[in-house]
Length: 215
Image (cartoon, rainbow, N blue to C red; front, side, top):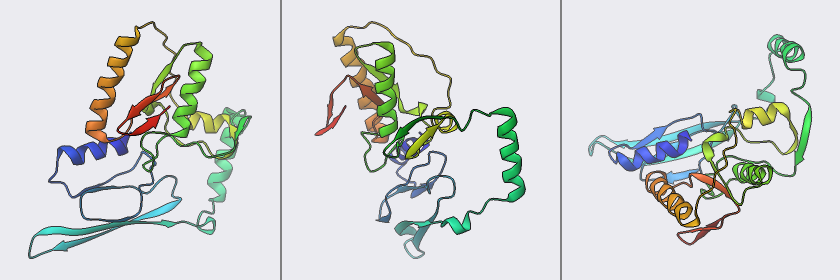
């Protein structure tokens, strides 16, 4: 994810005061911070990101930074009538099954959470589904396969395609427990050193890292 890569850049290049980014659809925690930060504003113009920087001209350095998120109300998100009509007609013609309901979820499933860098509901759900479909003892997925959150409530085909847009296949293989553990150890340790975020989601595996658990 773009957000985790940017956090890795801050680690590699300490001379950076911060990065203003997007694309990953992450809502970083609000607040003041003296050190470098990655500032983003979520997804689909649901909020405006505000970044306040205080620069000391005498010391020639950034002395404080603060990020905040301003929610955008529904009254400011009125669709353009012509564009809305064109989109509706295009869906009717080219993707009539887009609004077909597939399932329903009791909570919003997110692909990445800055508040919980070791767990994410969407990728955990996907890894569980792949394990069940393949009949394997365990499943591991790269968090990059999930791009959007699934909204709470009815899940449509369109929402599922937006959340998981890649036409990936399922790869199954046999590997010894010792080699599997070593592979995961090397991958996880490398990613945590660079990005401070869990690189994968698991099913059928119990992982303990720095006092935190990830299933």
